[in-house]
Amino acid sequence: MKPIVFHVEAAGEFRPVELTFATESEVRRVRAWRKRTPATDAGEFAALAAKRWFYYTREGATVASLDELRAAIKRNERAELAFLVVASAGWAKRYKFLALAYCRRTWCHHLVLDFLAVRPGVSFAGQPIRGIGTGILASLTGLADSLGMETMWGEATASSAPFYERVLKTKPIKDLFVIHRKPMQRIFRDHLRQEDRSLAKRPASRQSY
Amino acid sequence: MKTKLTAAEKWWNECAEYEATHEIAFASPRALLEARMIAEMDKARRPHRRARRNGVAHRRKAAAG
Image (cartoon, rainbow over all chains, first blue to last red; front, side, top):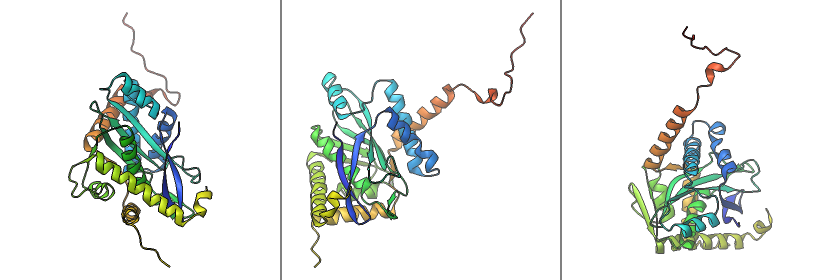
């Protein structure tokens, strides 16, 4: 199964990050974030998202790949399914995973974002890695579009609303964001355009991983 | 020479700047509540193993007789 690839800026270069559906062993790794980054929201959310994933796995309501998701929808078009995606990069060897997102496919074929967390303090060559959260969110709009979903939505809080407003280009966002097909496509297209231009400006970065 | 940034690049830079100065750790309140309830349920279901640790003998109830 081919991963979804997006690019982030690390140490002045654009580098690829792979976004994949998490399997059981990967969810266990994510759960361990809490021990490595104690007293952070990301650590707590990672552990709780993993707990929720295991709970729904016991109920047979999770998928661990895009193929599984498509097959489950084919079997039952009203299926409620959850999945966890994890971001990783071969060049950032210090971290198994850089970030995660917990999503649900609802009975009416919408995508819901429940958790989004970037591992605190991720860096490369002594510099912060930029654009991980944006890359995940843009990739999810691309995923929703490729699955023919008309809507992506999620609940927002006082701390998440400003981020969602920026990435989803929707203002104002209060306690709920709802993105329909056209804006989803625009966000994904703009993210790809930005990546293409940035990679073209730095030809060396294509070979640097 | 510095090239003019496209709208897509400006948008991405603004998002990346925001990420650099804010922790990206978000949960939907309802999802968070549900996950916490699952965690509590798990905790309640787990057997209490602590009492058996460190070689402490498990206390048994005296048999009636």
